[in-house]
Image 1 (spheres, rainbow, N blue to C red):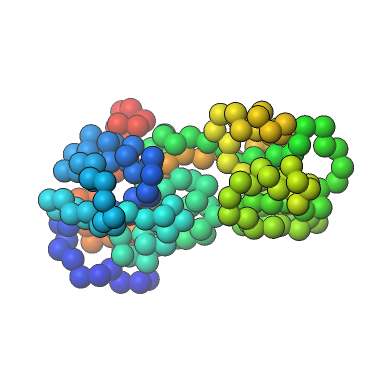
Image 2: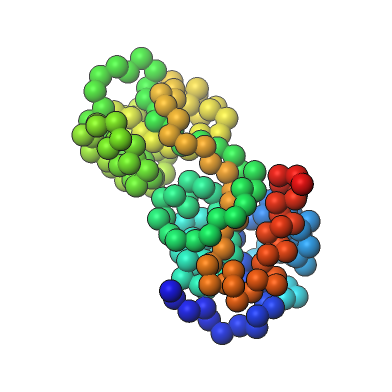
Length: 212
């Protein structure tokens, strides 16, 4: 297990994703008792609060920082966590940023699926193997739906929230692979070394999101 950097046992370092989830995460963590406020608009990537450091990261990097011990805990979508394959403790479903990862095709498509475009190659490979579909997976970075519209891929696997983008582009969900929401993740060593800070936080977040 990778050792944690030298820090005071009562100090927490949190990895939070940029964007909308950052604001929702800070609101929830504040309600749970951490002395956090929304960072001012700046280029700063590290924010210091009494007893807490917040690292502002890309979504995909949050599980890496937590797994390797640079951060004690973090908040990230279940979709990103599964795709990362990182070994972290996942004690709380925070029940916000809800979405689903789905197989998507152009409406009326009925031919075989030979190529699938996605930001989630690990999830795509798992899905295809489970169904015995020998399709090629093409890793893409943005505008995944366009791959199905241009013929680059016969289908795409992507996140869906409201479905508005699909309807606007003559696309439909064929199958939901799994549902996703924001999760609290914790470094396994930190759970022991900083248990006096982390265990009450976990308990309070469970109360706030799941009730007694």
